[in-house]
Image (tube, rainbow, N blue to C red; front, side, top):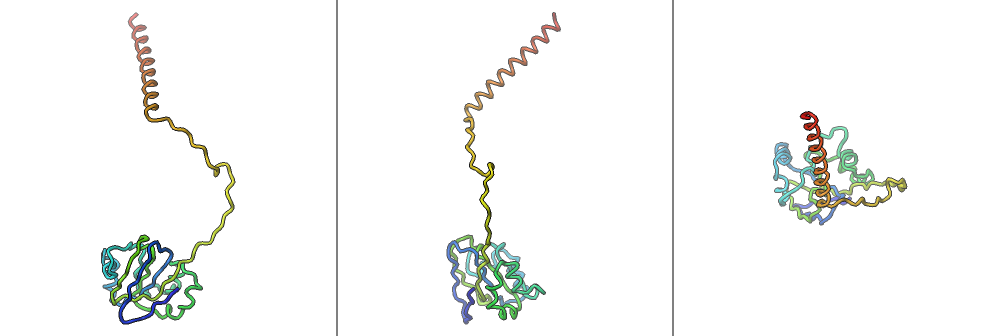
Length: 187
């Protein structure tokens, strides 16, 4: 976690190429209708960040009051995957935050280096790291997990030749039966 220093003008925020697992929390100084416009109007949010595009599925815009009992800390830990111990130093700040806010995940930039120049209405409050998944598994030793030898596939030209040959044989058999049935009827 790194908290942003407050200043009169917003600094440029550089998102490095390939960044993943970071969540940035912003305080938005705007009216509810402006928040709704940012959420609903394609291209509005990238514009106030001074960029061309942003994956809006990786952005959450909300009023902190709408989180009700969950609160901002609960939202970040349960919904954002941030470890509770990473939020602990900002406990008081997060509990006192009110009004419109935005959570912006690194995935919103599709791995590209991006330079954000937020408008004066947007203040970076903190940057957190998503908790990494910790897991382990026993090695799979069943026969189905072992590498399989590839089955050789008949080349298309050869497959077509075999199909024509079988089709011709089938045609000869059907026509021979037809001729035998006709001969039996007329004799």
